[in-house]
Length: 129
Image 1 (tube, rainbow, N blue to C red):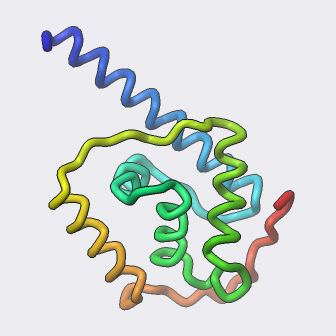
Image 2: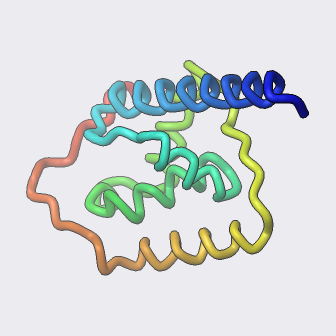
């Protein structure tokens, strides 16, 4: 592949990442959720098979307080429906099996909880869900 082709491929990937981020962050906002994803979060979660599973893993690891009022399945489905209304495609990345297995294991360990924070704020309403 020549440099021009590599640059075009990188530009296309960057545009896809930005479209995904805009769609997810708009979905969070529409549902009254107080979190935002950045490129690192999106690409890290993309190593998990299935968008709904990615969202559930994120919520379990980073916002477990929400699970006191809503199931991970309900939240991830509501977010995904809003995200798909804006941008139905899924972020495609290529990783080898060892990297994927290692990442999934780290995600699982994160969701068990030593880094969980307690939140005193009220749970956000899921408007339109």
